[in-house]
Image 1 (cartoon, rainbow, N blue to C red):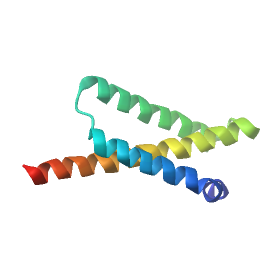
Image 2 (spheres, rainbow, N blue to C red; image 1 turned 90 degrees about the vertical axis):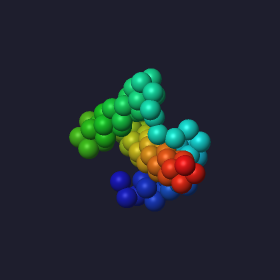
Image 3 (cartoon, rainbow, N blue to C red; image 1 turned 30 degrees about the horizontal axis):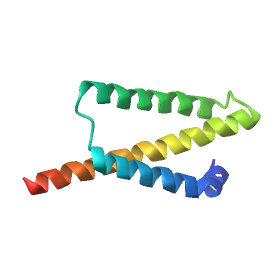
Image 4 (cartoon, rainbow, N blue to C red; image 1 turned 135 degrees about the vertical axis):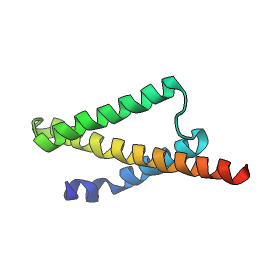
Length: 94
C-alpha cells in the first residue's frame, strides 16, 4: 500500500484538493437527499476498504480497487475539511 501511495500521490493530492473545493463551495450536507448521497459514498468506501483489506480481488483489478479506495478516501476527507471550513466561515460572518 505504501508503494501505491508513493506512486499515486499526485492523484491523491488532486482528489484531496478537489474534495476540499467542493466541500468549501457546498458545505456539509443538510438536506435528506444529500445526506443519503454522502452516506452512500461512505458505504462505497467501506465496501472498497473491505475488498482491499481482505485482498479478494487479485491482479490488475485488485490494483484498481486499491486505487479507487485511496482516491475516494482522499476525496471524502477533502470534502469533510472543506465543508467544515465553510461552516466555520459562515459562523464567523454571523
